[in-house]
Length: 160
Ligand SMILES: [Zn+2]
Ligand SMILES: [Zn+2]
Image (cartoon, rainbow, N blue to C red; front, side, top):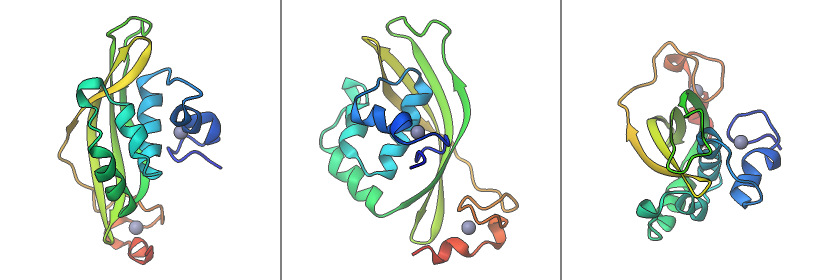
């Protein structure tokens, strides 16, 4: 199976191993991708576990899973990745800016976020995200993957 994060790699070798815990994310980008895949899989446990201790709320697990089951994730676009050269150092941080699209009640929702990650004891953790206000351009290809311009696309309305 092709990975859910859109890397075109095999799921098991990409996000699958990181979610399962058989592989450690080597970069903030890998962790970010695995978290997106976990959203697609509605894996609330992993999403909470991969956050920093201060942001780990067990009570979020059910909420995340509930949300994920009601939406259909369409795609992930990585826009900007900033990672320090020496990532071996403790307390290093990295930033990944991305756009993720999902379908909710036949509407495509764009989530544009700049996430920060910190490396704690050799493991990258998700620290926090800042939302960026943006919208899907009417003339851009529809995020549902139909190949039709967003303003003209009705394909995703039929996805359910
Ligand atoms: Zn992946
Ligand atoms: Zn569409």
